[in-house]
Length: 96
Image: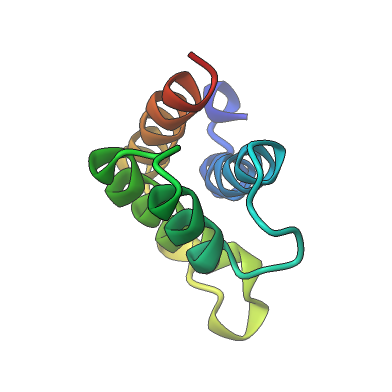
């Protein structure tokens, strides 16, 4: 999606991939993503730096995940690239 300039979709998909990975690694299903990030950090499965990156992915992804606060129109190529790079680093840490 990023390569076809679908930056909004890229950010939303990065958020969803993050949440799926956290649940795969034991985060409570159905919890808020914020709580899932904190849960895995608390269990030592997510480092503090990765947790901070996850919060950034969550924040970008929330633009599209919550229609009442839809700020996706403001997502830039740089925002999408940042979200995707952060998600990639987190996934590498979770699945090492």
